[in-house]
Image (cartoon, rainbow, N blue to C red):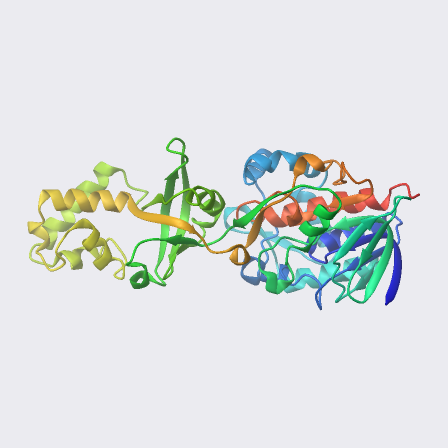
Length: 417
């Protein structure tokens, strides 16, 4: 049995954990970083299609909206370490960044792998000791205020502990949900876990025929409990079981929760840039100009060819009928479908298939100024383990870096018993 000791033990070597470890060590603490896998940052390497969308240039108030009602918890952290501070920190450790479409910030070169390597080098340069293949399964707090951490072949005595184990999605990267069990074992509440940024399952039988289809510049909408309407603009990707893509992921957490109570209808506006009257006038022109051409041929000027057969079936139209002879009722049906193509969502893919885990350690039990537990002195949380999840666009990584920074600095400068 390997026996180790540390002033600060950090559990989990993702971006939050490596940042926290480096910050704590820079504050003068003796830091031990424990990683259950065979290398740090395995999930980080997959982010942003391996390009690593690090953060976003949105102003603070708009940035916080990306997390929903829990975004306010991050206001303190972001007032001290936000996107500008992150860019400066990354530059210091050798990662230059650049702004791309939508205000998204990416590394100039090296992608996600380059960021991972830079973070590891940074942590090691501060004196952090990294131990791989050390999966922490037990965590207890002794009467003297210190902690005991244990695994299959090791045990650690630490004065402070930072849990940065990540969520429960993508378990193949090491995000197995271990941190939730450790938090519960010390009395913390864990809000119900569910997937976010995850593909949706739909009920329609025609979906296999649309597999691989990508609709660009469309608008996805749905109603929350029959009242407020939510809309998301971007791409919708069809699969053989449902839909995914940039317009779907930001809404997937809430849609999944609503669909768990019963099937939920979502609508895809295939021509969101056109008002109804403008779109109707265009249809009239296309049908009139089409003359004896088949209706399906004319619609291929408006829609992807793969979608046309399904679209006409839903409109109750005959594919081979002359376009110029399209009945008014059929034309109205086509117009309605162009602006509101309906799909019935029945749920999401399981938690392990989500890009992010929604739910986590209850935020009222954590001090937002330090990330220290309000229940267990000397215990800190950061990253995806907390009940915080943002939409796509760099929001989740910014949260990881910022909470990791606060937790590391607070734990590193703490008064040790």
